Structures are given as C-alpha cells and as structure tokens.
Image (cartoon, rainbow, N blue to C red; front, side, top):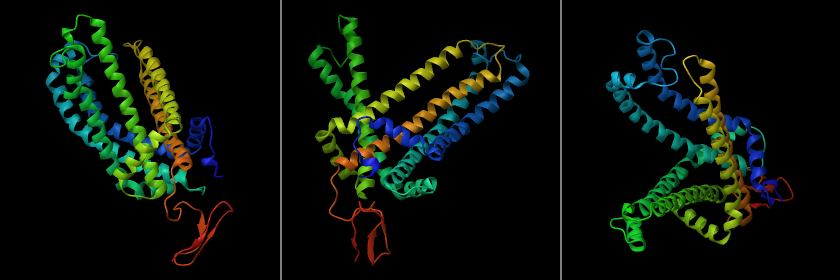
Amino acid sequence: MDEITRPRLFQFWYSLRATMKRTPLWLFCWSIPLALAIVIALPWKAWFDSTLQSSYAPGSVFATMAETFRFDHGGELEGLRAQSAVLAAVLGLSVALFCAFSAGGWLQVFLERTEGHSLRRFFWGGARYFWRFTRLMLLSLLLLSLAGWLLHGWPWKVLINLFCGTKDGNLEVLTSESSALWIERARAAVYAMAFALILAWGDYTRTRMALQNTRSAVWAGLCTVGLFLWHPVKTLRPLTVLLLIEILVVFGVGRLSSSFNGGLGELSGWKSVAFLFLLGQLAMLYQTISRGARYHAAVAVSRQVVPALAQPDPWASRVGGPGGPQYPIDDTDDYGVSI
C-alpha cells in the first residue's frame, strides 16, 4: 500500500509534515502573494516618503496619523485609495488565478509516486490543470454568492419574518436585544460553516478531477457532494482539524501583533516595523503550508474512498513507450498493453 493512502487517525499531522518537507514549494507559494502585496504597497510608500520628508518631524506620525494629518491630506489620500482599489482588484484576481495554478501543482506532486525535482513537477501540474481548476474556481464563487444571498438576502428576511414576527427582516423591532444579538451570531456562524464547507468541497473536487484525470467541474462537484454525504467524518475530519489549527495560529499571531502595535510611539524605529512584518509573514507562511496540507489530506482520503474509473490508472508507475507494452515499476502496480 502506498504511504499516502495508508489510513491514519491523525492524518492532519502527516499531511502537515509531508508539506513542510517540501520547502521549495511552500516558499514559492508564499513568495508570489508577498510580491504582489509589495506592488500595491509601493505607491503608498512613495507618497508617504514625499509627504513626510519636509513637512513633519521625524517619528511624529510613526504610530498613528492624527486627525489634522488626515484632514490636511484628505484629497490626496482619497485619490490614492481609488487608485489602489483598481490595482488591488487586478492583483486580487491574479492571486485567485495563482491559487488555481498552485492547486494543480500540489496535486501533481502528491499524486505522483516519484521523488525529486518537486518544483519542476509543481509547475507541470499547475499548467496541466490550470483551466480546469479556473472553471471550478468560478463555480465555487457562484456557490459562495448563493450562500451569501440565502443568509443575507430575501430568503433570510422571509425566515426571520416567519419565526420572529418582524417586518422586512428588521431585528430592531424585537423586544429583547440579546435575542437579536444571538440571531445575528447564529447567522454569522452558519455562513462561516457554509464558507468552510464550500472550500472543502472545492479541495476534494479538484483532487477528484486530478485523481481520475477528468475535466467536468460540475460532474466532479456533484460526485464530491455524494462523497461528503457518504463519508462525512472521514472526508471532513482532517480538513476541519487543519482549519482549527490555522485559526489558532492566526489568532495567536494577531493578538501578539496587536499588543505590540499598541506600544508603538515616536521613539520606535524600523526594528519594530520589521518585527510586525515578520509576525505577519509567519502567519502567511503557516497558511501556505496548511493549504498544501489540505491537498495532501484530500489525496490521502480520496485514494481510499473514491472509486476508480473503468480506465487505466493515470497515476500508475509504469515504463514503456506509447503503443507498446506497459510494465510496472513495483509489485503493487498493474500493467497492460496500450493499443
């Protein structure tokens, strides 16, 4: 039995370890969003350098910008925000497309049985599945929009009007403020669960498409829904644990960053900014590793529960040219003759 397909209770740990071992991959996946973030930060840095160079005392606006500063430069800041919004939209789309590319790279590496040249295989997998996963990304966005409409649009208002006796979904008419607060919390919790479930659905759908070498995102998505219904614990348990660990890491880094940021003052220097930057990148690095671990876990589970298609295994380890005999590399593989 292949090591990645061996059933494990603590699959999340083995997936994290397998991802962290592939240092060039997660460093590359971390560096691309960082480079795009630097692109959008450069215009702001250039504006602050030119504005603060001769008009303000050194360090006077290091920790916070006073109301006078924001009022004096309100027009310039508004124009800079408008320019940044357009650039951020373009770069956000670029990051989303890179995520589709990196998903194919992770799956190519985890599905192959060979070792070495992982970055080369990562690029090959990213290019191989890019357009399939881009279509799936658009489908995921439609599902997220549907979830948002159900919980923030007309269906939610109808549900609240029916059970709470409100009008047009307005909770301000309720006599109990705590009841309105708990209803809003429940809606936020349901939306968060729906968001996480759609992300997990996307991970398993991409894994199925790569594992079976299929192209239909809709059919693979429907099969993944059936997989969740038939094996809910086995499929969602490792991704849930990985998500909880990621939340704890990001929350811990955020609390540390917030407490340190509260102590900044005019005497603080570049070392304080560098420390805050490193904290942020630490969280981003772990999120990148966790993303790769999600695909490793999805591959491990899918190889156990996803039925094989009535065709040769596209990931079998074979040797032999097309049109001739195909021989297995090890005793665990099958072999046949391609025609």
